[in-house]
Image (tube, rainbow, N blue to C red; front, side, top):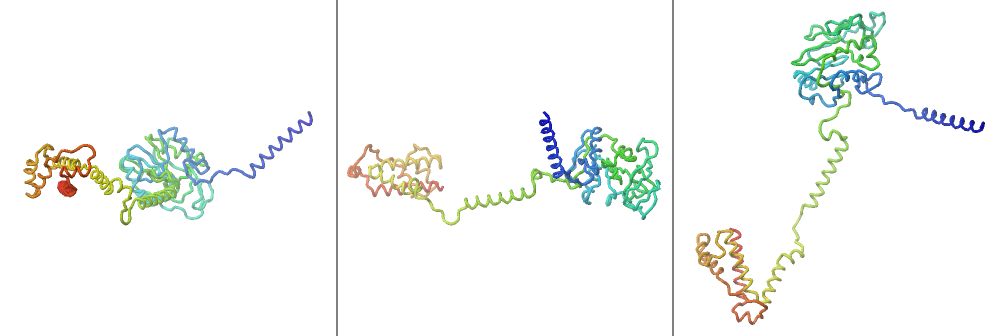
Length: 399
């Protein structure tokens, strides 16, 4: 029993040692994501604010397209936290969207290029703040925050850790929301049917700082209004996508597919395109071409079926006259000649009437050439009449 316990203890220690070494050698590391991402749980992410806001608003979604693709409608909110790479065209498109009855809350340490706001640099080297702390411009300073309107119902002294040396230029058309001893930190301006709110302290939205000082009490009233939809901008954090069906595929795959498609089309074109003369296979000419016609004619001649051949040609000629001129297939040769005089010359009309005359009665069975000759059907007459019939049929087909 004592040996069994030692075995169990040794096995347990071996397993623990294996797990400890494995964790130490292959320690999983979380990816270092950029700051201010609404889906990031890092200290510098803003997921905590987003999760809390989702309990108060109808729908909160990430916006990963350009601002010109913002949905049509009104009573919507776009939240942009320290956006990067905002162009003049982006600002104009966003202002146009706001004027339709939507709102924007912009968190930016120095919102350059936005109208009608302007910022002023208030830093001037090393100084003392109200709490007696020394700070240099760009570093975090604990400031006393004063609310300038009925923005928040919170009573008492509000403080905030401010890390920007810029303040909103006074004297603008916007309504100041709160400020510190250096100047205005938040302002709201009406644009058409909507509004734009600018806040110079995006660090207050981060997971590790939203519960510090009075950050939450100052930013939460910004979202007290109820909107039909709330969009959090991730386009200007490097997570934008392009609209359309091909947007779900990487660029290299789309390019390779296009090149492969062009190569396939070129191959099909080369396979289907004929260069040079067309060569008709002999098998086709034997079955459907001149050789087949000659073979059938030889059999008619050998079996003395000249009259039957002429009767078939005459029947085809009458059918053609019926299609072209509306002449009844049972019309006489004289009626056909009368109908032809207005359409062809006198010689051709006479030839047509002669070709439509009733041929001699066809003889059945196999007849010898001598018997056919006695019936007055010579090879020369058969060839002559067949040639004239073919010329007449060709004339009518071209008409």
